[in-house]
Image 1 (cartoon, helix red, strand yellow):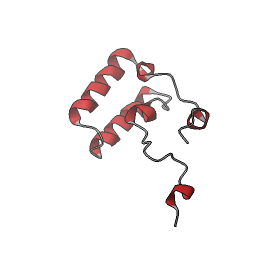
Image 2 (cartoon, helix red, strand yellow):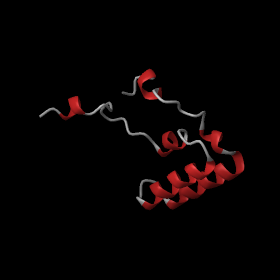
Image 3 (tube, rainbow, N blue to C red):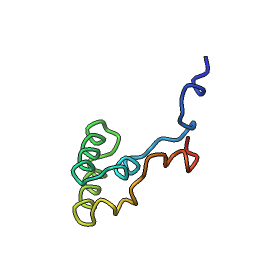
Amino acid sequence: DNDAASSPVVEGFEPSVVHFIRRCDSESQAREIIDYTERRGEISSREAQAMRAQLKEKGLRSFGPKLKPGHYLRHRYL
């Protein structure tokens, strides 16, 4: 049984909350990502509050440019 062969993700690579935020088209989508990851305990309340403040004060693209489809393939994450 070779799990690596069935998984497209490189071992050890875990997309961060910021990776998911950078795929969003709107601030409301980004807030949903922040809320979801906070509820799951993937980020702390303090981290979530800081991200919400950044989103409100600096905007969605302050987390980085939008990641386009195929980004991970082009940059060899997969």
